[in-house]
Length: 234
Length: 234
Image (tube, one colour):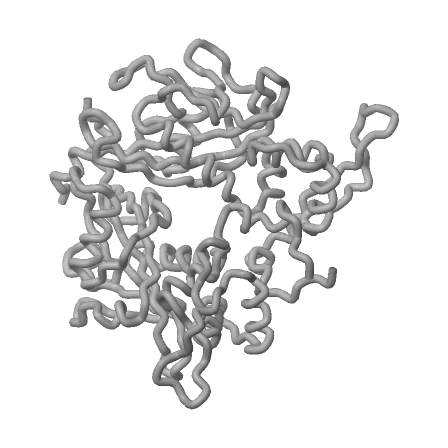
């Protein structure tokens, strides 16, 4: 029993990808890939990778497929970000977009398709995008900056192991401000989220920095409720 | 240019409401309102309040309207929880449901419609519901139990002011375990999220307990990044 209302509302999926890459000054900032629209509406505008939801395809699968098809990117997993459905967000018929997101490492970002219809841009200085895609990326940035588990973000951007300098670079890029190295080191160690790997950065100068690993065992609901636990003796 | 795929996919909204109410033993637990389905598919099954999304109605407005129409509940605001779209979640056509949620105070819950087709049930001991609604409520409970800002949850359940005993009752209901009152009091005060109102519980016995207020000024992205700040001297 199809509802007349359904015939006027369409479902789409889109994906916001963030990677850490140097800006013109060499400082690491957040970048996101955009795709140029080759069809109306808003033909020629840059937009998030995405497409229509086929009736027999799972939401996340559709998001991954359209992302790969347009940008060549295939993140290990996509997380649902939010569903945007404002009546007037798209000219013509009502379109509700289920938006997924992922953080990718710079080497994966570098493997992304190049070409006239795919472009990476700094996520904090966007051009005017199609539909409400500026607002979607702003929301994704807000979510990223409010994420509780920063070590998790670093893990996603940097991979299994990383130095404290690399970790600080992630924090500085996400928080958009520079942090005191000594203070940062002390606070990171105190956070209990990092474990030394015992290894040091390969191919580094005469005093190679230690490599750390993000300790997932420390990440539990409890660990996010500090005042529900006894505070560690300090 | 309608896509054939759209004609087979329908959009719905549903709402998960939680309130704190006593169970048979008088202990506060989480309750959620359900609505009996009066139409196929799955006629007679209990389900979340909800309905189809009309083409010209905002998602949140549709969620609020269908919630009010079925249960009489009108929470101050609804928050988007997640969008459930598994291909096989509904018999027949593909249905994608954008799910909203809210925490309401027990007096508001008490104002909800009664009747043979509306029923409140303890959220942790659900019957077999229509579609994937058991899974949706389990997901909502998981999100609630992983929420960072517990004071925010207490605020939503208890209102502007509350005693430490009432606050502990919220934590015990959400965490499903009892907490040591003295320890809880110490940790709550230490959390810096509470402010004394200077008032005491009205109509209470000869030593009425103090009333506290949830300090929203303490809730910022920074406050959720403890290791990004100098730790308070302890």
